[in-house]
Length: 114
Length: 109
Image (tube, rainbow over all chains, first blue to last red; front, side):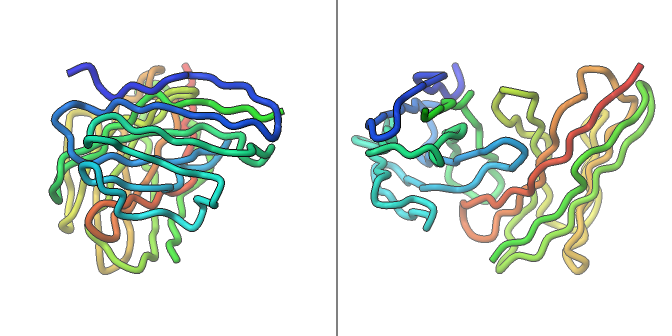
């Protein structure tokens, strides 16, 4: 069990550019989540996958954001036409399905939009 | 909407005990989680309560009162490495967590 991994760990981009982040969950976990965290705040839910199906998207996820989880394994989060307000830590988490199972978080991708 | 409140900061001395309170008003309730987050790192799971009462795990304990919408995390025998942000999170359905803003605990020698 190598834990949840995310790539890249840091990304600096210019406003208007597109960026894509990758998350590799713990292999046995069928649930995958994306959160966004800004300085001094707790993580905010963005979206959730059960296997390959995206079952919920937060209102925070504008049309510029898209997430996929092909084949129910790794997931990608793409942000198109980045804005300075997109600067944040993007966290991925995974878990088993079931009431008592906690979410395991990856190290995050810190995005800075200049 | 979800409303989860916890103090912004707390300071305590090494070896002491600190209690971090969390109050919540959520549309549903299906468990309360506490996570620890060191600066620049991922949140790591500490405890889970779904029924009223106290759950103890080593130096950390967590309490829940569903009728009061209240939980606390108790950290005993504080160590310098316990300096971190502590996040209270409520699961209101089958999977989604709503987090508080976190409590930054500073442990002083």
